[in-house]
Image 1: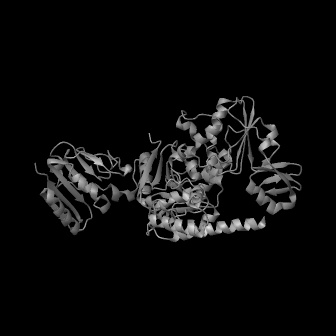
Image 2: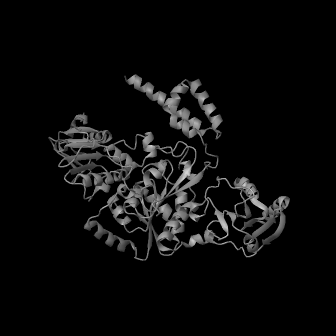
Image 3: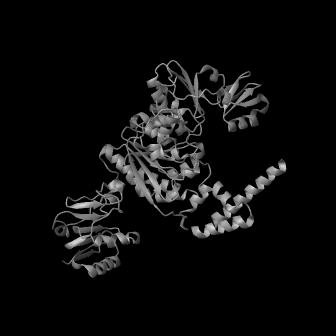
Length: 84
Length: 502
């Protein structure tokens, strides 16, 4: 049991490392995704469909990369509530 | 949620744990207590068998227990539901328990209010229970579209869609002791009647929702330079370092980091305006009907603020926002969350001024730069030459013969959506104010096509370099007959007028 827990822990740690590397990589979202998939498949941490299932938010966040200046592309929306 | 048995008595955070009793608490709290009072705690059990789920039954003469651990602001969403239930079933008894019960204190609809952990014997004394943990945290599709209060109503089996907004706003109630404390404290910290007091919550409990502190500093410093303004920075003791950073040496900025949550809520009754990221001060402002500027990122302001009065929500419009993350870690894209890069300080300052002007009829002095009217005397003849023309980026400037277009919603421009379809060759004149940045080049070029034959295209720019003036002149000369050009080296403003051929 303890061994299994260690294995799971190691596996999770490896996943975190991969994701960290991915984060630290380039700002081009297409290239990042390609790199991530390559790393995931080659390192055999988990298959793409498993990744899609477990990290949907991560994939979602991949859209709209942050530029080197730290600024994200977009606009500011202003909402007025109860102004009458 | 679990129930623990007590083998030896102990006190923890004001709650007495007595032998022979069992206490209901969250799993993580059980872990903490076991680490600290291990030998005093016996077996623990799930509470599922003790629950008597309420599903919308008649509560007349019945006793209802509602409980949830926190957080402070989330408990505020419960407040309108209990008010509605008590109004519908005046003879029912409402018991409520929470680890963050500040929003429920002194609420007249609640008969008994308990801390968490609470004595599990309470389950035997009530007819129904509502355990409403996880309604918001589930990140269900409904929670992304519905206001949190509507989610809470639904959980109690009540359809609140038709309820008026004022019935969905939490209310705060204060004891005489609290109001007396406020009077003394305001005197101690030097708040006078003539002061315009702005409460600013520095941070939330989640880094993900924290507004960038550099921007917050600019906002706080600008406000504190205004006449008679006092800025009160709200936080806990752990926010003192950021508080000192934001305050600098400005005597008009005060730190409120040594008060408890109830004291801060009491103090908020004196605030003229509140600025806060997505946290309990938003709900406090709403409960007190205080003018509010909400700084949102991971969540849309609409699902938290839309029933409040005089509230402005600033939301970033980026592809990954709102992400609806209930997380105590920072955003995976960086800290502070990069979506906040789209919330500029200018928008926050204009939101604050908008609310102040609404109630006092006076603008802040920092608005003089933005409110400055363009000097149009040299070109007024073109503007008055025919019926209404159109003006882009006119800011707060209005002219009876101009349809104003500005994406800045605070300006009150007639059109704020730059993506709407503008008719070609429809206007006797088009004035294009100031915005000559590359990102607006398409709009600039399209605006030239909106001038009808014989009409005028006017470019007006304040504080522009002479090189830009020459560029505009050359550009307009290609498709218009130049009628008037002027560059003022003193003010560095320029105007170029071109006439479109028939």
